[in-house]
Amino acid sequence: MRCDGGRLTAASRLPSSKPLVEHMRTLCLFLLLVLASSGSLAQIQFRSGGVEIKQRALRPGDVRMFLDRKDFKNARDIALQCLRDTGDGWCEFYAGMLTYGAPGLEPNEPEGLKLIRSAAEKEVSSAQVFIGNLHFNGTGVPRNPAEAVRWWTRAANNCNAWAQNALARSYFDGEHVRQDYVEAYYWVSLAAYYRFPNAATGQEVIGRELSDEQRKGATERWQRFARDSGCGSTAARPVVHEN
Image 1 (tube, rainbow, N blue to C red):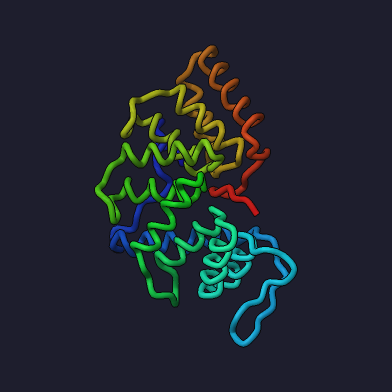
Image 2 (cartoon, rainbow, N blue to C red):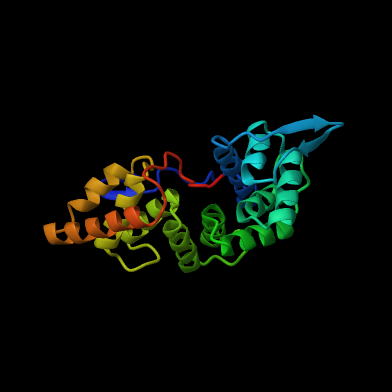
């Protein structure tokens, strides 16, 4: 989010030279690498091109370790095994993203999307953002910005700072929702609290549009959310995830 002539606009745009499907595959890879960057290491051994997990059940951190190595095939295999063994929503999300499209893997968009949707229903915030973006762009589904906002709201309530920032922009500009500066201030304040890039600047810009009473009410709301949500105190990355 950035300030531009007193308005908040998206800091980046979709590259017009790429088809949307290719863009979404690129976004898949970007999200996977972001998620991988802070995963915990597991006790894993390579054996004859395969993988063995020792001493404990699989978990999402194991998938992220292979994503960090850009070993997408083993990452997908472990994600699918983790899903079969535990039903974990984050493993399902990773499996879905890797099935939807990743370098060196044959894409299966319908099956990948099915897994991502299932993870979104399990309240995996990154999956909810992804589904929202598909509806916003009309990629593989009819374009429906209102449905996108609904998914972003679910993700934002699940501690996703990217979604909080997107909602702030939507409410500030009155795009696909009724313009509401108080609601915009609430969401951008949360995004700023979780350290989403440039959200603090957006918080300052939107705050100028509010009365002292409106700012106070919105501040009490976002501080209550931050205290009671269990999201933690900071989120340096746009996707908040669990180990």
